[in-house]
Image (cartoon, rainbow, N blue to C red; front, side):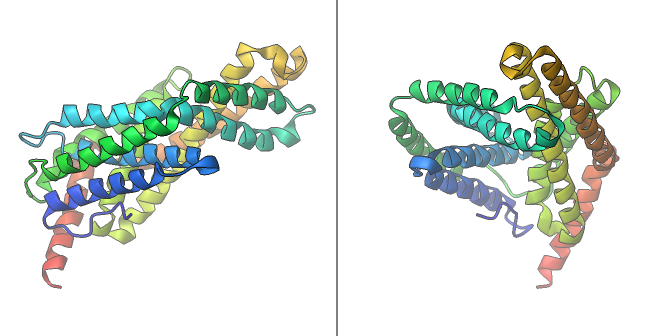
Length: 304
């Protein structure tokens, strides 16, 4: 599935095509069994995030029930969140054990892995009819396809998505400044959500000027990854503080927490430096630049 607009024309149909493609892929992912089940759940949640990013672009369209659609897709994602989060933390544990291996004289991660694996087993136990739940979710997505086809969208060119782009970028800029102004108390995870949303929007617009926007897309991915690393470290810190005796002696735990703190400082500093570049423009200037790219793309497409 290509999460990208292929033409500046018939934008209403283009956006529906992309959402339907996301739903098709989610349906395929939910067919995974065995070891690939958690991967399928993870990919399904990603498709829902991509769909919700599209919804943010058309939130002000007349007669379009943005609130209802956004709430519906968020509900589907939340139904899978506990399973995915529990599995994701196991993956984070393995990654962090490698990252800290050469800096620690002891290995606190087996205890964390055991704790997180027990949590995953408990979450799975809470869903004894998981395959039935996933089947019901597939049926819900199938019904949603017909709803998407009936969305009352009109092709107004860039005007269709301009307000949505403006609002999303502005929220990302606000979150960036909150993190920059007071990093000790700021919610970097909330900023990451806005960065991911902006990443999806730039991905959709990539064909308007690939040479320019591909670089921005790549940098947004880097920023999102940095903010994801910071969140993983925060969760590890919370796990250690919740049960310090599981992670070694007092001195060993203090050393581990110091490493986490210093690593978070490094990651946050890199994220803020990259964010300063990506959010250097004021919202209106940023959207006007995208509108200019779109206008050029529109003219070029007429000559083909």
